[in-house]
Image (tube, rainbow, N blue to C red; front, side):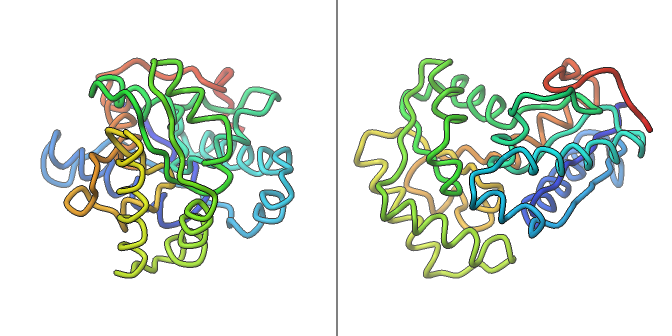
Amino acid sequence: MQHLGILAHSAEGAALCFRTFCQEGFRELGPDDHPDVTLDLIALARSMPAWDAGDHAPIRGTLAESVRRLAAAGADFFVCPDNTAHMALERPGADLALPGLHIAQVVAGRAARDGRTRVGVLGTRYTMDGPVYPRELAARGIAAEVPDEADRETVHRIIFDELVNGIVTEDSRREYVRIIERLAGRGCDAVALVCTEIPLLVTPDVSPLPTLDSTRLLARAAFDVAARRAAAPTWRGGPLDRR
């Protein structure tokens, strides 16, 4: 089996991805069994000033350092359970030390297989205002919808004030459900939870729309690669570099 490297950018989403990957092994391979997995996390605080400034180059450098460390640990490929981080990973630059799966391609692919036509997008302000999900959904003939400006600010605030710190409240859950209801009213037939912490707050049983859980979809796609049930990824990766 292949060795997975988890390129973490925020702790809670990365932990959920790690747990889901291991649990997939328990279900598919047997008790206590899963492919090898290594997680590397450079504190999010190092990158937040650059995110706020819209300067993605130093963030890419930080993420690239994590990928180098994953390669040195023996990983064969990586996933990054942080949707916003893909804006930095997509920047032009040298190949990373490992190839990776692209989270938005995984989510958009599932939306297409489910026959979705209009998907609401909930994530950080950077992701909701950014090009990644509109592009990947449009490539599959799916329209992307984001909340209005005030609701986008609410979604973003709850992520950074609460979810990335492991805080989950009923008041915030009600706010997200209200926002998803408004997206349903605009014709959305699913909602993409594309901050990897949102699935900790919005579960399928409370969502007014079917959910596309980016964290668990990515972890399961990673398991398929690690178990050699899917082709090894090639995105952003050059020759393996285990320095």
